[in-house]
Length: 133
Image 1 (cartoon, one colour):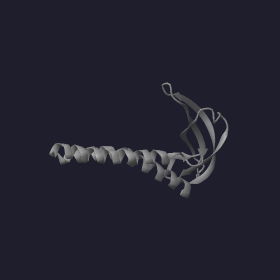
Image 2 (cartoon, one colour; image 1 turned 90 degrees about the horizontal axis):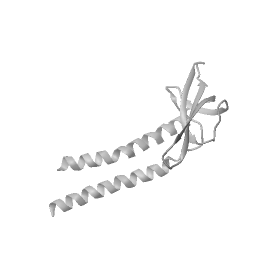
Image 3 (cartoon, helix red, strand yellow; image 1 turned 120 degrees about the vertical axis):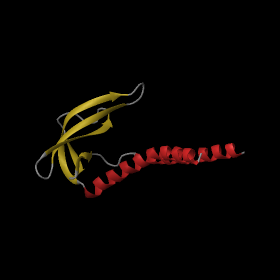
Image 4 (spheres, rainbow, N blue to C red; image 1 turned 60 degrees about the vertical axis):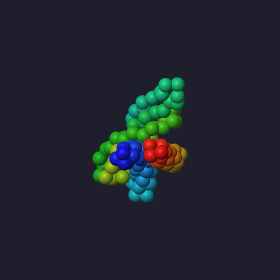
C-alpha cells in the first residue's frame, strides 16, 4: 500500500516540479540572457471553449554569431502585430527559449500547485487513516 501512496504523491508533485522549472528558466534568462531585438513573423490565435483568447507569437531574431533563430511565446490577444519589433532576451545555449515581457504570472500557479500538493498529502494521510481504522 505504501507504494500506492508514494505513487499518488509523486503524481501530485509533477505540476509543482514543472512550475518550478519554468520559474527557474525565466530567472536564468533574466540574469544571464542576451538582449536583442526580434521581429514578429506570425501570430496564431487560439480560442478556448467559452474562455479566454490568446496569441502564440512567433519571433525571428539574430543571435550573437549572426545566425537567425526563431522562437515563440504566448501573449494576450491583440497585444502584438506582425512585422513589429520586440525586445527579446535569450540564452545562447537555448535560443528557442525567450522572454519578451516583464515578469510573468507564475507565482499564482506556484501557490496553486503547492496547495494541490498539500491536499494530495492530506488525502493520502486520510486514506491511510481510514484503511487502518
